[in-house]
Length: 600
Image (cartoon, rainbow, N blue to C red; front, side, top):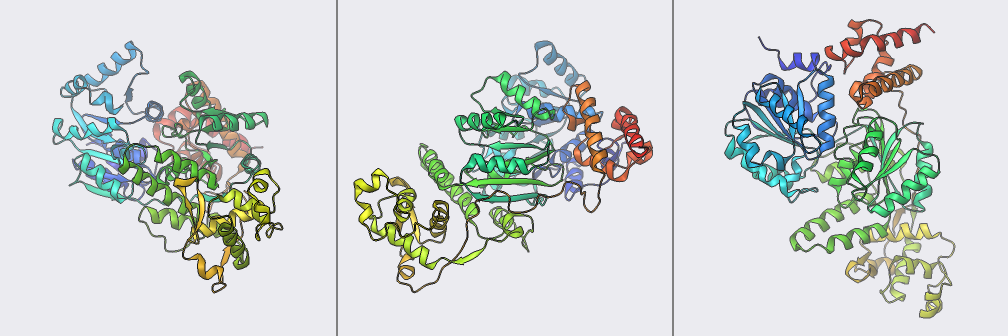
């Protein structure tokens, strides 16, 4: 009798129980049913098709968008004793022939492949000769033009239904709003498939947004507050910015490197491999980095610049804390970034696509400007309601100090009016603070009644106030006309003194609260010294095996070892993440380290 899904979960992957929805999805796929799965990054999407692949007859064909992601997943499967391979352009001719031979001989449980290679007519004809257990389409949001990472080569996957009728198909993504979900199901012929939405909440991630002010110093302060050796990603929008930030970090003694599409392929591979192997602490990157990263122990993600939509922000921050341990997501928010992002979007030639992207950008701005629980705003965008404040974001942990901003708001609104509603934020602040720069003098704005009336307030304070006035609808920015500020009808009663306005004081410091402790797993304390020793052992084993450390064991597994202190094989097998194959390969060395530590 073949093994049950529960037995495979335990023996192969080392987990004692399924996460929410996993078991139902797995059983449905084993029974031949199609499925659409929306599950957050780190929520266990891969197991939803990997376990059925080991239960059903034939090979599971897994569509993956990035070569690096294929390699990481195959490495992890092989480390668990699963027969898996990838078929892509990185393989030499002999290696490619070997993979195809294993495919035709029925020696593979899973084969990872890119969409364009899968849908090649020659490969489709080859697959027609092979028993296929299921198709799994990962990162399925790429199939939809409403998605944030639309890829034309994904669209042709809709033809799989014509070529392989009756074979179950599962589509999976971590980021899709309601409209994108419907579009994915329609394009892939999954309109009758069961839809599983596991929820978007990642409670272990702390979300923080601060006003962007001297971002280099803010980033440096944030990194100084982190534990030594913590791995993280810093996202910036331009290649030039990426290289500048990486160079500054490296000059400050931080193990950091740049990653963007303009670098040679060999350099990109070097950076990615070093990061995966824990030999590089920080990668500064454009969005070209990360989609293919299956590294579970990323402890922080910093957005140096504003993402263009919430889907991208959610997916990129979701690369932190995939192991379930505490992680942080920091966003530096400035209105200059908003103007740049709008300008880039409006250069697009497709009016409908421009409309969609501007809508998504405005939602991103709304998240950054929100004066409520960050997680409520984030989850609300995806249609998920949080019943109570999360308790793990900057506003929950340190609510902004409120103050009566009525008089300051009147000064700012009056100044916008006095300069003719023809200038942007920077110029209005210069007038308020009494700047003597050449432009002020040339325009004669030093003679205005509002000149210098806000000299006692910092530039950053005025910037925050004006941003909140925009957010509350008292001011608007004319993006088509160099982002000049204009009064709205709502400003009249405020200017006339008929309304009081309470605003939050700006957040200019990155660290406003204590750093979350890493010495907890649920409610269990673990031995930090032993944890560090186990990490060092894991790195040695991984280096000898030529794989990333997390392929051996994840941080969460090591932390549980350091909490439970197993001293024999039976106890070690009860640790989540320790399956029988890994117990045979690595168990003795980890047990020796634990026993040695206890004897000190």
